[in-house]
Amino acid sequence: MRRKGRKPAIDEEREPVPLTDKEKSFVEEWQAKPMRKPRILKVSVNFAVGTSGPELEKARELCERLTNQAPAEGKAKESVRGFAIRKHEPIAVFSTLRGNLATDFLKKAFWALEDKISNKNFDNHGNLAFGLDDHLRLPNIKYDPKIGVHGFDTTIVLERPGFRTKRRRARPKKIPTKHKITKEEGIAFFKHEFNLGVE
Image 1 (cartoon, rainbow, N blue to C red):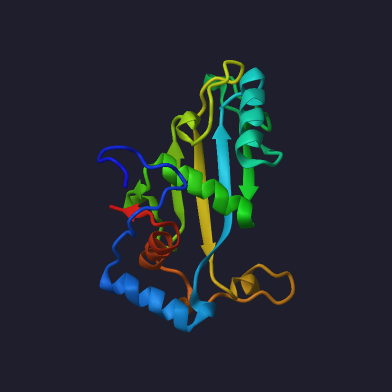
Image 2 (cartoon, rainbow, N blue to C red):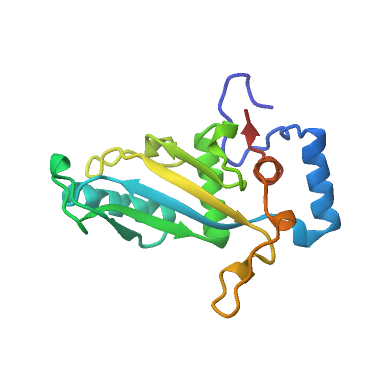
């Protein structure tokens, strides 16, 4: 049993987050109809440095360390003279995680958030976005003076079985309204699957 006020270890068992009656009905539906259960399509981790050069290279190295895969570059869409940014200049790095890599990263990120988040971070389709201003808040990360301290943004996109029909090249189709994921269902998913408190 952990002491009151102490932050639990990342692998320490926590009390289940209470679900509302409506959220419980979502879980019951998923259990009865597995094709209705949402799942994580992808997790995007973005380091928006705002400039190229040494700082971008530090962010690139850090992004690779945290996500365990080589990041891609994000380039400026237009020139911004006030910030000395040229069009197509690399100003960010990002990684797109799927499967176990995505799940493992989210467990660490939610732990850094103390397993709490505002319902304002969800969009109308149940997707979740949040930022961390200090990567050192993640578990088992030590300060490296060569890299410094960086913040990053995380975006989580949900889907349901059958969503592939809108992405396929041959005869794509729209997703019926009744099969789309709602904000309330997205909140229920993260509460149930990650024990994430939503305020």
